[in-house]
Amino acid sequence: MKISVGLYGTNAHQIALAMIQGFNKHYTLFRQTSREAKTRFEQADWLGVHKAVKERIRFYDDRVDECVERLRNQFDAASIDDTTWQQVKLLYIGLLLNHKQPELAETFFNSVTTKILHRNYFHNDFIFVRPSISTENIEGDDTQTYRSYYAKEDGLRGTVLKIVKDFDWHRPFVDLEHDVEHVYHAVRQFLNGMPPREVNFQIQVLGSAFYRNKAAYIIGKAINGATEYPFTIPVLQNEAGQLYLDTILLDAWRIGLLFSLSRAYFMVDMEVPSGYVQFLRSILPAKPRSELYIMLGLGKQGKTMFFRDLIYHLHHSEDKFIMAPGIRGLVMLVFTLPSYPYVFKLIKDVFGSSKEMDRATVKKKFMMVKQVDRVGRMADTLEFSNVMFPLKRFNDEVLAELQQLAPSCFEVDGDQLIIKHLYIERRMEPLNIHLDRMERANNVERLEHVIREYGSAIREMAQANIFPGDMLWKNFGVTRFGRVVFYDYDEIEYMTDIKFRQIPPAPDFETEMSGEVWYAVARNDVFPEEFATFLLTSPQVRKIFIKYHKDLLSPRFWLEAQEKIRSGYVEDFFPYPQELRFINRQTDLTEEQ
Image (cartoon, one colour):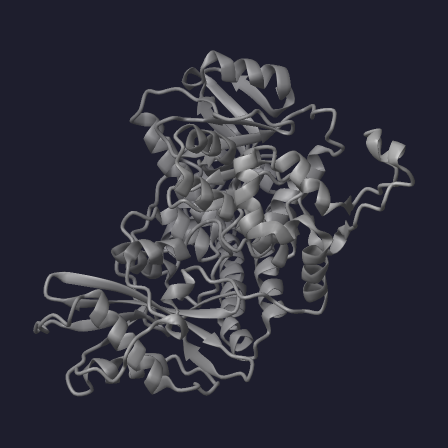
């Protein structure tokens, strides 16, 4: 039986209240675990850091499911009529007028309603296709988005000292004044001397530190006249539990790399997340808002904004989706839009004969990548369900591949092609194509760089408890900054689940020369000595790889990495070059000011 109520009817009002209560519960829990990041940092609870990041990923879906269940049980949600849904949306908008996270609450509304309604209702009357509440200049009740400092009495050094102390870390610093001297000299060197101070000079610093792995990051900008200078100061902890400033990052592009989707999400205590994103955009204007929300741990909001941007791009472009360049995979079908810097992946119905897995296993591997520390070496993916694309935007080859390899994964509805399950990630040049191009151009310097990067990617993933499985060059990509990143996840495993073995000696010469395997091999057995056979077929590539990463070709490295992981040791991974660290800088702090 259909429920029919007036504009301010009880049911519509109670449904809207139930939905905002569901969101508020979610964000309260989100802020609580983000706020606790400060304590985990102070206590050097690095395993707790990884556990918290992993658990936080589930928060959103759990609260959405709770809310859907409540609506079904209390209001028979599936029977609510169209008029009531429209009323619910209008009443919900009213509840957001003085809300501190309206954009997130709108997305939560969409997540709940799309689990109840058929996709035919995914339009303006029933969900938030566009934001209805402005997020400009929202002020927090209990916290400021950023603090402003004026270097009048204390000077620049005194101001930096105050900035750090205001974060109120309950750990002593090794020598904070000495670190501040390093900061001062690094800024002076970067600017080729200190510019004259204008009357509007101030330093603005985001109110919460950004916590990730074993570091806390202070993020802010200095304003002097019409010029703004972004900066980030990583704060680390030594083995004695004392804090120190590790460096200061002053290039906007280097700061932007902290927010790369190939790294773990930050923990940040934000009452007004849009204020943080707005501030970050002021220092990182090229970074999409969607990626900033994702890196702040607000993945669903990032996905919502990403998809809005994609639809906008489709409306203002004419090119067609084509198959992505590179060797076709055995598990994933991958296509791309040349004018848009992303690739679109879906799981095939039938895998290659060498792949012993199913769709559920592949999904599990992709989720695993979101939950671990990606250390800048694994591309994050945005996961979507029931994505509608204009059918006319696909070229014939993509449509044929879909029909042949993944017929159950899509359907055509009028002029729309609907993909039931999809992963989207940043497009990179496949490493095998990049290597071939460098070899043909005889670019030895570039060749050495990417091969060294490739080995470093494998090494760092292993130290972060990830064994990539299929290490062929085609499964890695090269970013626009020349960094090598892994993106094929169907065979990844935790390092602690792998048994690394040395190839036993053959019983006789004839057996060794036969080409047949003379030893038993279990499912998760790996023989590092074999890597060179299928990876290093080019003499030039082999020579470079041996120069930097010979230890990856024997079990010892892998066994030692496993031992460290099992002992609870968490490796240090720096999202900036070692030479920028103050400990490695050759700065004379006694020079004349």
